[in-house]
Length: 206
Image (tube, rainbow, N blue to C red):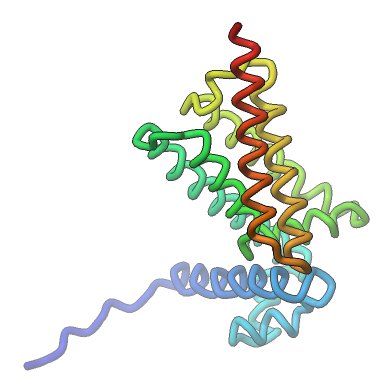
């Protein structure tokens, strides 16, 4: 029996596959060893590709980092939408949303994005190039929160601040937990935040 030959990939498909390898390797490298130590050599080694191959796809490390930030945002937005779509099936949608945000902040994908944010504070070119992507990302997330009405029990004027309050809390928590782990305290913080939010919602309904 003759095995059917697979169709050959187009040049664009091969290019896309190479770019994806570099992006995945950059996420892994930055998330694990930090922005400064994620050198071109480190990234190429993790991707299993040559430095020359990287420069055939990107003008330099900065271009690769910018593309990586865009891909991280795309993946996180998609994951957030999936969770939001299933909130209606949850008995406690607020608790589900809070747990997702907390867990997402501790993921390597978010650690990589956080490292890029930190680098952008002192790198004007990086900051300028990723700012539109980041602004669009948060605008889409906030719009999704509104669309799914997970915060509908709160006044409209505080819904976006609540989202950022919780996001930044869990982001800081994830940084500390990279050094000192304390699952019991993390659960206590989650319970406290949920109690505070529900109390706020109840008081503002009365």
